[in-house]
Image (tube, rainbow, N blue to C red):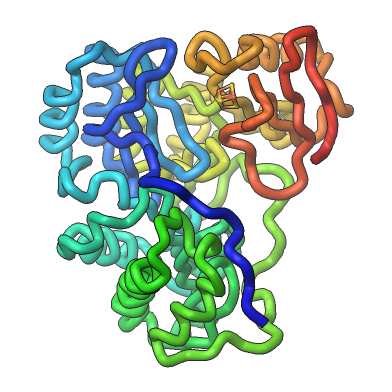
Length: 390
Ligand code: SF4
């Protein structure tokens, strides 16, 4: 049976980038792609500096492990582009919006069958090296899962999932595509699947933004790769946890990684500078948390205390591990409330609705940034909030 397209798009997506900014109510908004969520200390410092000099002083963490800069003055894009490029955050101006790569948190440091960081670098380089792939929609997403199953279920158009140290499965639209390769051959396969998406999109004369929006998209792209989707694809990943993981993890090399939730995903420039001082690389996660790796055992407590003092959360019992929010007022003209201030007040006063379960506050029914999985919606109505699942 042919699967119907999930939606019919009538034009190109308007996903913001670093150079193609979005005019928000609080100024221009730039989205800086951070493949795998991996940022060096120098890149963090550079982002903190541009947030201070050109934006509203903060880095907004997104549900794809990217960074948004808000409150930019009109015409800032050239300077922003130059500064990002100097920090290695804009390797290809023509491909800047298509570098959407999620990678397993802690990969290469603890857990997982393989280290997917080399995949991140190779896939990013492969995307940027092919002029045709600049035509990908800004919403196209690749998930690179080292086997722990944390990002494979996050709605990637194409995905690589390690099944063992020697075997990798390709996923298309989140489903098993029935193809298995050695880890060394995984990135070329993901690139071939990505080209297959564009070819299928052209064949269907479609302007789909996502693979699932194409008629029978995953099956037809699999066929272009010489594969047949399994009749009853088995799930390759476990269900996503209901709360982000926080705390500390001992790495394979004996050092320690801290994982901190950043309330409402707003990392201010001083916090970013502090992170850059305590470690050489951080990993932003799709759960608005930050992995602070490679700490020596005797440094862990001091780093945790210093980060906690700035507002980062290490306590799994904290309500901040369960609360997310869209931009709301004043950043979004569509918003019916200052949802971030209201959510922060509810956390501070212990008055979160829905018994404080995992919840997403939004200024309107679009519910931007809503996490996947079981989430209670807290949606502004103009006279209060509607609370409930949908
Ligand atoms: S959910 Fe509505 S109010 Fe919130 S950012 Fe999206 S469009 Fe704006």
